Image (cartoon, rainbow, N blue to C red):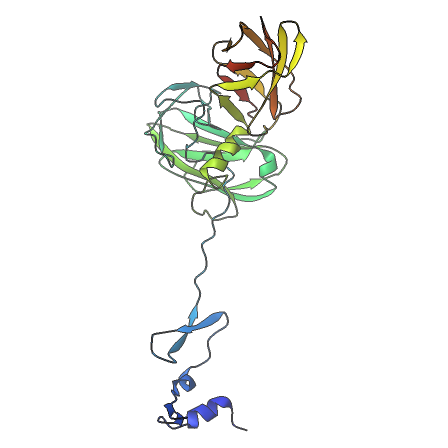
Length: 305
């Protein structure tokens, strides 16, 4: 029995149906290979071809937060000295005695230049790095290393660097500038064996800020309404944070005690044990009264690893 293709092939080139010419070129189309799709090759009627779809680019999530130095809640100033353990850009701290980072601010982040002998470190929370294979990549001339916290640190190396997480410890990411100043940017830690393009840990600049505020939060001015009278001139109020922190934060006052537009209250203290990582309590004394609004000076809350 002839096939449909045979029937089309047997038709004359000038075959007509109801007075309209029929294009028989479809009979010349051969079968494609597995995975190909049939698509138009040109604007000519019945001109089709088999083609292979390109493999889509997959960008894996970044487990390093603030990898392009966009978030700077502490207001780190270019070339300022960081002692060992001091934080500059969010989530990044010095791991040498003296570290300076020189940079020109840009909205989408920037490369930093590390002074000779300086270094940076970020500790990645173990809950974000299950046991498995990962790759650390970065741009610039600095060298880096990555290891499970508590393990013997490996030698510094160029990008990319393969890494096996044990899933039971925080992960330490470090960079150094040896012999001369070195540059660093677009730091990325991702699952797998091949590095993909840079991306924010949170996906957008807004979620990147929220990711940073899990570990550190600074408020230049907080307007608070007193909620509960503790004594005749002392009231208690709660300030709710924009992002729940990793743990109960350590609070540091970075400005004058208190200013108020409608009270003579001049001092306040912090609740040493906030009920949860998403709020902090204040005791206001010295002429305070329930229901008044108080304006507080800068505070810092830290739950860094």
